[in-house]
Length: 481
Ligand SMILES: Cc1ncc(C[n+]2csc(CCOP(=O)(O)OP(=O)(O)O)c2C)c(N)n1
Ligand SMILES: [Mg+2]
Image (cartoon, rainbow, N blue to C red):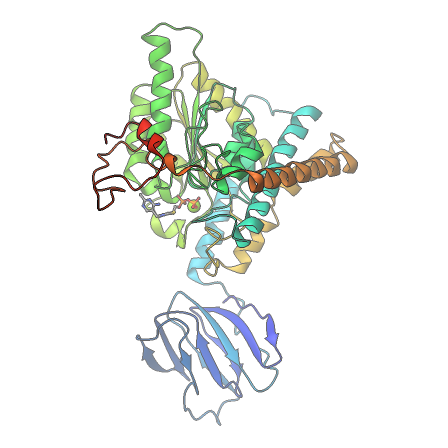
């Protein structure tokens, strides 16, 4: 059992319990169950509360003869339950056993297996890649930029500067940096709704990304896309996509374009590679398999990069997929599958260099599973109550930025002052990005119907049969009026 004991007040303690039994003192008076369907019992006499809605107050909990026993034991058949137990006394809670639940064991077993696989299955390079000081600092700066940008987004979001959902990338920086910093200018990147950092790594200025998040006209999509839809033709960023899996066929299409230009149109100069980033949950989606098939069939220059952060919103990866080893799904299509520690930017980079070279020389696609972790909730609207503190702590201790920092210092590739000055520079970039976004104008209303390809009849038409939009120039788009 896992038990967390932060005391909120002398008389109230919040603990997380799982399936197994636990103890609490006799003088506990109130149980507040933070879950919907709990079966609970006292002294093994079970009582059922299927109707329990969110945060049901059960007070007093049970009448039971507890005189024979100094402690009360409760069993919770539900998978996870977070309980707040208020007690008139200070109430210390004694876990019966430091035993992990099956799910917890699975997660840790999965992580352990993953780590073993990483060790057993090193990147398929002939010799270990070493980095120069310049390369190390580029990686470090890019990861610090990504992390600090996202932290700034959180601040701005909670100050009401951004609208809708905002999904942050904290913790996963080694994946974006490890791959994108090995790409060339003409290469393509496709992302998901967790797309700000991919765009930044690919060279989209922080000003343009922040402004887009503010919904301003100076944003990378002129404020029309917002958080989940970063797109920049100039930088080869083919979009963030709110629907999971949508970016995979787009990246596959871009890879097809490269192949077609080179082999059919005989343009020898074309060697662009596409990289599709997506999550573990997305790998249960049909588009993933369809694209693996096409990419293998046509030997497309594409890399499928799975950012396996173990969760799809609140669904644990190991509960949702037939074989949690996503990299194994590549060989089923004749594509090499690689599993890499996604918290180690140097290992990611090593795999990236090999996979990109393979794609560029015409040897076809690679599937790379990066084991990573997000340090925040699914989105900024997610209270992140489902993931276990122990699991979060396990990955927090493997922070990819701190790991790289340690490496750079230990190998005399940088000193503390250099790294601090990078952080200072990034802080200035972000202050500037926020000021720029704040000062930028909102897009004109005329932009609303631009790029709307569907028949606009019935959309935005006032009672007089005319468009409600005051600005006549909006009809300049493709919409028929
Ligand atoms: C086609 C589709 N189905 C369902 C959803 C709802 N949804 C949003 S995020 C998400 C989980 C995706 O998890 P994962 O692929 O692991 O990415 P992560 O958020 O962990 O980066 C789901 C199911 C969606 N956006 N699109
Ligand atoms: Mg995920």
